[in-house]
Length: 265
Ligand code: GDP
Image 1: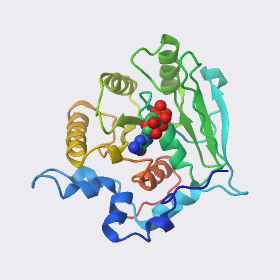
Image 2: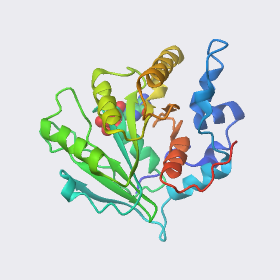
Image 3: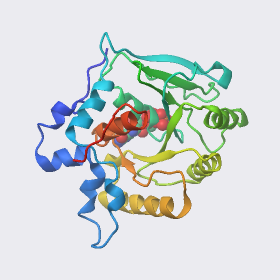
């Protein structure tokens, strides 16, 4: 298998000096000091687990003989999806938003897991199911684009509407370009179905601090004013630098019911 990238494990992050460590584990908090005084940052800290919870979550994402993490199957239709036996999360976003990179980062402590990419034009877009031991499943939904074919839209809609074990949808938004027209279409779909979701801002290492702040504040405002089902705290990630990935693992563990308590930091 592949070697884990640096900072894929908390033990590596804990060796960093304090401010660098905060930037990796809580990237949103790192931005706080650059905001105008009086900016409402309560939403930055709604989910703020302590080290013990982060470590428990990491253990879920680390495979071993007694705890296999596997790609299960791919499906193009709901009746091909595996039985809804475990709590489930799904990841959706525009093509190229960084979805496969993020899923690879989440699973980097299970290097045998192969995150398949089917990007070539004309290639059938599928939902890919991953099973994390006996704890939860993670679904990589096909990337949507400007000209998403109708059968793809129908597949995603059917999944979101019918999947009763779906605990949370992670909607990925590009941290460099912010919310796009197609992202709004996804938001409208999620709002219409009334299912809980959360926004994840990707590739934050590629955005300047100013641009990142602008996108974060704009999206926060949008979520506050226009959504019902979206978790008010944004998650920021870089799959290259590994920032936000540990926190996201912990949130996945939490929403799938695998962290009995999340004690405050
Ligand atoms: P997908 O189509 O959503 O699965 O997107 P990919 O994961 O394939 O990423 C699309 C492009 O963005 C690739 O060139 C990646 O190398 C790049 N990319 C993805 N995530 C990051 C990130 O966190 N930081 C940077 N700098 N580049 C990224």
